Image (cartoon, rainbow, N blue to C red; front, side, top):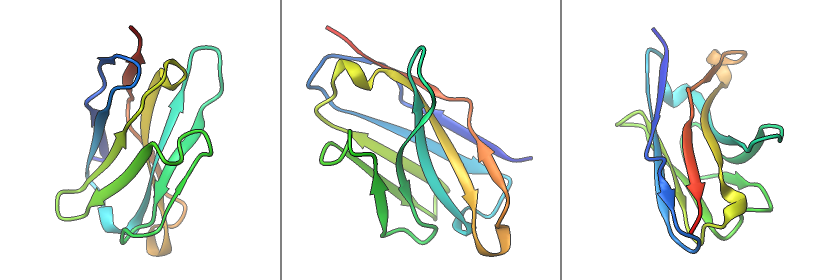
Length: 120
């Protein structure tokens, strides 16, 4: 059974930092590009960051470049999103996404989301 379980979402003050995690099971993690998306109330879901299957190359939305860092540990089947200098506009539900590549191309899995709220 495929599962993506996010954790770490909390209430944080503006300017603060937070790391959210996503642990995968039920599929070969290293075959998948991992992405973080977010969706704020009344807005469409947007891609925040992505990292290729073997790690290394990453990409970020312009709104988070220089503040957020995506990383992965294939031995732990886990992807992380380190968020620094958080602002109220970063408030959203953050979703983990597994995008199949190579032999797993066409597979696409989602987690249930974790709420990040930035407020004083």
